[in-house]
Amino acid sequence: MLWSGWGDPAKASPLPGPTTGLLRDLLGVRPSDAPPVALADVKVAGPRLSGADLTALAGIVGDANVRADSEARVRHTRGKSTPDLLRIRTGDTSDAPDAVVLPGSHDEVLAVLRTCAGRRIAVVPFGGGTSVVGGLAPRAVDKFIALDLRRMDRLVELDEVSRTAVLQPGLRAPAAEALLNERGFTLGHFPQSYEWATIGGFAAARSSGQASAGYGRFDDMVLGLTAATPEGTLDLGRAPKSAAGPDLRQLVLGSEGAFGVITSVRVRIHPVPAAREYEGWRFTSFDRGAAALRRLAQDGPLPAVLRLSDEAETMVGLADPAAIGTPSGARRSDGGGRGLEDGPPSAAGCLAVLGFEGTPARVAARRAEAADVLRDAGGEPLGAGPGEKWERGRFHAPYLRDALLDVGAFAETLETAAFWSDVPALYEAVRAALTGTLAGAGTPPLVMCHISHVYEAGASLYFTVVSAQGEDPAGHWDRAKRAANDAIAGAGGTISHHHGVGTDHRDWYAREIGPLGAAVVRAVKDRLDPAGILNPGVLVPPAAGE
View 1 (tube, helix red, strand yellow):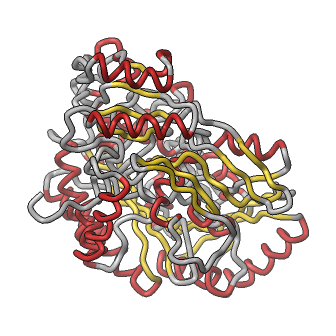
View 2: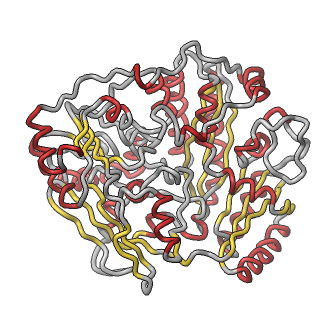
View 3: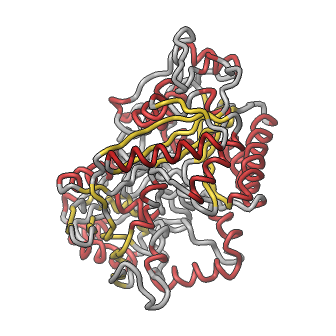
């Protein structure tokens, strides 16, 4: 992955000139005077691990699998949030690990954790490095390692009778899907981070894929797991469901490496669908579109993919990221994304994208049934074009963010979820908080939103914010993000639907679960990790006075 941005450098592309000009004219975006530093010029402080520390770790995983060179440490510094990228682009490596350790088995992970606990070396599990909530930057540590799980990348077992698979944590999503496809199966998990995220990361952060309406969230898919902790092994999940006490798998799912390191997961899998079809629908307002999605979520039929962009996101074409910047003469009649310079269409409304999977007959039947519901809810069919364009470009948005940063714009996302009755007020509260904070500081933003995950009882809201960077873009965003977090808490939303807690959301997570809930989380941490070496500062709310 690109060390100072997202993904494959070969897939990066600059913004078209007209789009850059519009960002300048409408949002006051100006190119930065200081271009990003080159990797060769990035300086990293000497590792704080002693020779004895490095020797002890090498004795477990082998000399070749303990790396303390500058490049390895830079590539494992922080995650991929916009503040993370802004800092690394200036050469700030203050959060660099002291070494990168690559274990090859559960037993090696267990031994590394025990050694680090004894030597008071903090450990940050590292999969694809895609965290956007400060999940890879521990707080208040003297020395720490990045525990890179890439060597643990096998499909261990595939049970065709039960339709389950056992996967190792360092397996990247495309590789996992390819291994399953060879046997005629799919996991059905395609988040925006799909190209780089790993199986272990999906479980540790409770990831939710773009086909969650059809396949569920990743934590819904996990039937069993194994985790290594400094105190020993957790081996959980003997059957698909059980009444044998509380489900301890739920302690590990979403724990973000603070309780242990996931070393394998047993997941449910599905036959590869014979047909996949996508389509677009237009609604006159976000409220009307959300009401239509609620009808499908509650009464069916439920597509595999179901998402709705608000008016702003529809206007700029973020549902079709590859179309942003389309020359103004190339007007689109298929309902797909418009170029930024197209300006607000007279009645663009909101774009909904649906995806159906299964046998051809089942897909056709569900599409027809869904069409009846959507028409009755006021939807206008746009045909296959918008859905197919979204499907082709659905992993492009993080690359677009890099291009925006390159021209001096600030682009970041945040997400939440709520019950359907709370969604309208939550939507307005977060938009108002972001717009008011950023505009008040002199960088008026473009705030966009979409619904991408739906349930019978509620839905997620995913916001994208674009503005000028200003003089202190990271500090500027911190104030806006805090205002948005407060708005989420005040409007009854959860602080994270699928990005996780990390360090960025920890204080609001504590508010969400309350003092007793926070004490329970700390008690679990103390039992599994008494030395406090696992991802310090991430997830676990501090006790009063700490």
